[in-house]
Image 1 (tube, rainbow over the protein chains, first blue to last red):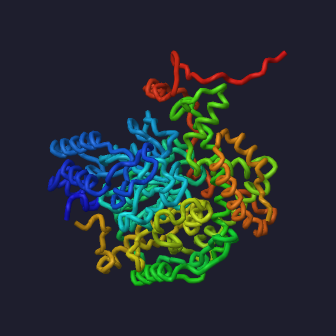
Image 2: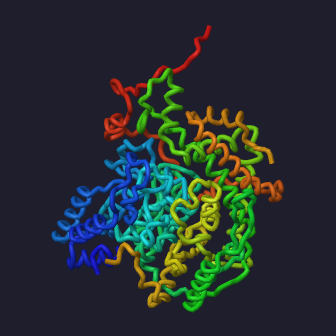
Image 3: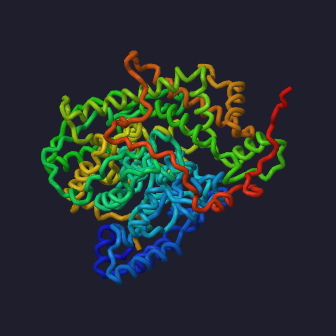
Length: 529
Length: 106
């Protein structure tokens, strides 16, 4: 096994014991990136180049000199017998929606293509302070607006390491692809409607959306301020726990970061799950799709392969001692996407008004009459169609004459979605669940070009993940097998507020139960030599 | 069903959004907005009694988890030049913009 393939927790132990050096790990990982990643995304490329269709293209920016300096510092500290951080020597990537001091911080948009951040986001800063080695910034849907990475202004956009003609999912597609392809053991992503869990499922890795407020949003370029959650992507549950331990916690620079002590995620990972109650809801085993001809929404059963994989995962957790509870009602699940179409757009439109060509980022080079024309040309030229679509919808549904019909109604439906979760997790209620088990996605990774352009169909890719964002509750997605095309399938465990330790524990139990399964031995094509 | 976002409403939204669009883009965006509204109308099927209030964020901000309000203290930025150098145009530490439309009061 090559060094770049090792897990974060193994790397930490071996580096501390001086069996390997942080620099050796870094060089192995850089070598791996040069083999599989191909050219980085840039705004100069108008389209994806076919000549690099068998490459992953996770990166926008590599920070190789910074990484070498960090690895040297770790090796020197260990040689001197100094105490090092919990991620000392672990290479990681950051979704380019986070500001990291001294790096281009682009949001995969033309409007920030020339922006170099003067400060670091709290979770990114904590990863570096813990001894993590920053490999660079990875691609995403423009401003996180998408579920495939095809909307990135930085082309080529990432491709799925299991089949490079398939999408990575999104919006943390570069993060999931990088972790799956051996380009860094960990990646920092964000989840607003499923943007960590959906690409994690598509790329066969672990992704966790923590409780809203568990991880600070300071330095995260905002999309939906009431929904955005930074979180880990990793190759296994232990690594996700190790990373969450570092990034979670109160932050005086984010008033919405919860002022609650962080649990011990790593040390409790292998505690027994005997007697923990896991629910299964029929409302998560049927899906809604817009008819391609009429646009009318219709309900369909879940794809049999995905249903079977999720139910098999439930069976394995039952073997490990969990109590399974069937027929859990989650009646407002299907309204997650319609409510999200309203709430996220209003928040996005508000957040995107700061991009105006005045203090940073792109400004139109055209001659203009006045300030208003400068705004219109700057935003017209530098935003892609996905940000424009969200701004326009946000304007419409929050306008004074429509807000009661749309925005306020969506926020009240959000109350009902939250109540669904409150009822099933109530420790004195009828169900008293520790977690709800569900498939993460309605499909596996779809072919590049199949969905992009149809903004309704693309949004429905998030239908099984978005209710947790409305409710704020945490969820973890884990791989649970493959479909007939050899593409990963994911399932998720959703828990009550701040129950990350329990979810990670259940996830680890599932890993232990399936450790010897044949499908666990498969690796993405790009990892096979 | 007739289109909810007519060309006139769309024009108004584009103005509010401060966007300059080409014709192809405008057609695509207006069509997608109307398609999305079909999905949004699903929300109308849900009965909402008066006791159902809005939820502006999922996790309740209880006193247990809400951080105390910070002191209203002024902190200097350690490197304001790093911020100013990001600006498209500056002069003597001011951000420079084109003419700001204004109306003279009598």
